[in-house]
Amino acid sequence: TLGAKSFPLDENGNPIKGIPRHPIVEDDVVIYAGATILGRVTIGKGSVIGGNVWVTNDLPPYSRVLQSKAKETTFTHGAGI
Image (cartoon, rainbow, N blue to C red; front, side):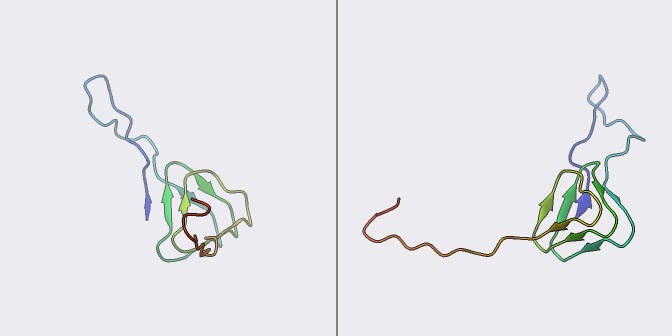
């Protein structure tokens, strides 16, 4: 998903047209399925955005943003809760 994070409104509450709101994706960027990039952010050249990752800030060139591995935690008799 590539999209706007918000819509600036005028004094009457109507969306202002012509204001850039969507991401800038530079050259040689790989975006995997399920990734969400929102707002007027820049994804730097050669970056990789993993699946099921949310990006709402600028990324410098050659960045790697990946989802962390799932960690299974077991609680015995309420310990650690």
